[in-house]
Length: 396
Image (cartoon, rainbow, N blue to C red; front, side):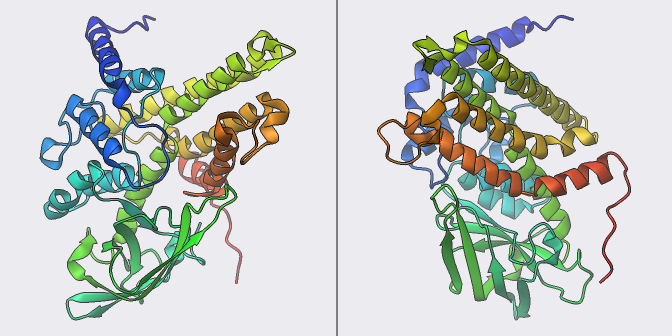
């Protein structure tokens, strides 16, 4: 089997490599969840101009307007990762809402929201989970009652990432209270500066308030802010969830973490010898490297099925489960490689890379729960992917 790139892709690889050398100094550092600043927005615009992000989003919505090409996507990711450059804006608006609007949204909604979201001018948060509706999302109670041409929204969302910095929220609201559980839910686009919205931060085990509780008291929203049809938001929500799982299972992000782990082998030492000299450490990282490669190839399989409009089956269903567990194991391994300094966190003079690995370990542990817990993901794989009997429901 010949795994070499054809000349077309070799030429494209050199093109991307030349871009990284010419423009790499413009790349922003870090990937914190925050409002994109001027440097981030300028870098995003440069990547779009060259087709290195938003590659297949039509030009009329602000994208590059190119044809889907899996190998070119792989080359872009490889070269930007190799150069240690930012891959562009990756937040809930870009990776979850934009593909939902492209698939289901109206032309007016696409024209209004895709470009400013893509260029970092508008930031979004997701109003899904509630205190009594997490894994069982369809049990949500936040209500929207008709008042003339408007809805009055009342309720409570929780674990709402980025709500404190977001301009807009895509939110699930029960608009038909008498409809069956999975019906009567509407998917709406809500400005976060609307009167009646209260945001309270939730500090996670990382010590940072990435999440929030959001309370709605008689929040007024026009009825034309619904995506898709009124009362059919469950179908729209599942489209967004599909893209959320893809975001959480991004193999390129995992590959960047793996590269950081390999760097640990090269820079950390025991008794004056780099860890790379010790077979036990090399073997441990090599096993993880093999799993990352498998994850990347599975992603290519899923993308191929999407392009052919085929169901990827179990290959798609395992993405989120596999990625979140693997990301956490990479961070756990890095902390082990750091030895006694791996236990440090905070302002210690001896902490490595500003405690990045410790923070990433705790954050990635949370993502095993967020976006659908691993237990729920295993049920989905078993029932929908492998055709096993559904888990029995207890009699109430």
